[in-house]
Image (spheres, rainbow, N blue to C red):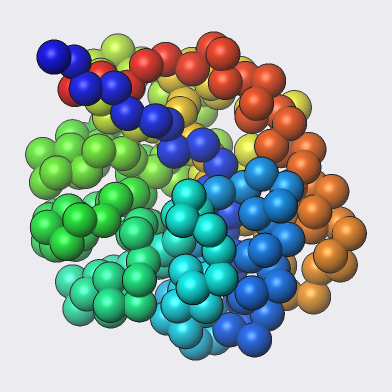
Length: 213
């Protein structure tokens, strides 16, 4: 039997999120349709923010950490209730520990060699970072040689206008950072941008390639 998985979709990168703001920000983004939230570990008290998000949001939300560099950090994220681990680099030990603990790994890659290293360590998705370095044409070439079940998730500079072109080239998710959240952003701006991104994603969804293993 062929196993088909759901794509990652939009991942909101909440860099700088304070734990005291986590419930308010998380709930507002969830209401716009965003279902995956990442708190980078270089934010203030990120593990507490993850705990708050996980306890406050419905069960279909995914919560986790970004800028994860060590296996000790992976375990801390897991203990906080995290479900995803995002890194700016490929560390095979970090990928293996993430997968062993039942979480989804998103290691950052900028070359096809790094992408295969991540896949061989057990990653089911790779984060193209920065996406501008790889480009749409580069990602399309990667898609032709990577295993069909591996997700390609561009991060950096993706907006509603360009999202569809990346999907056409094989992307199945996107990391969205300061465009949707930064400390001090007005709630109205945050939710307006999030709704526009969610709308663009839903418009592109019918063109998504299936993820099969």
